[in-house]
Amino acid sequence: MRMRPFIAAAALLIAAPSLPTTPVAPPPPACTTPTTPCERWVMYGNGPARSMVYGSYALDAANPAITRALIMVHGAGRNPDHYFETAMAAAFIAGAVENTIVIAPAFIAGRDTPHPNEVVWGEGANNWRSGGAAQSNPELTSFDFLDGIVRA
Image (cartoon, rainbow, N blue to C red; front, side):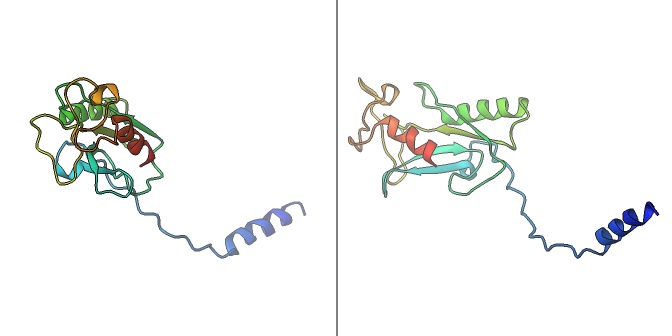
């Protein structure tokens, strides 16, 4: 007699119709090299001014797997490619590539060749390293660039 309720419950579980499920596409693999496919653009306001970053994932697409960010800002040598490689190596070592977006901003200045509408930063006093205004867009500061990265 005690077995009947258990058998009835098991029969209900077996007979219950399965709910339709929507397949969830896996997130794209991380972009891990400082090459053109890893270039991302941060727009200022409605544009056209913009600045480039290397990023392991897109900045303009939701990725629920991402739970943290590592933003690695280059030094005076303005070599974001090397800093991106270094930050990606740290993510690999930490086993965090799948849940961390790695970003290395490019503050171009001096003899660097800008892309169309790319913001150029000064190299003298009050430059991008101190939060200074952009040479090509004086209304923008390097803090605006970092704020744009965080917003994206």
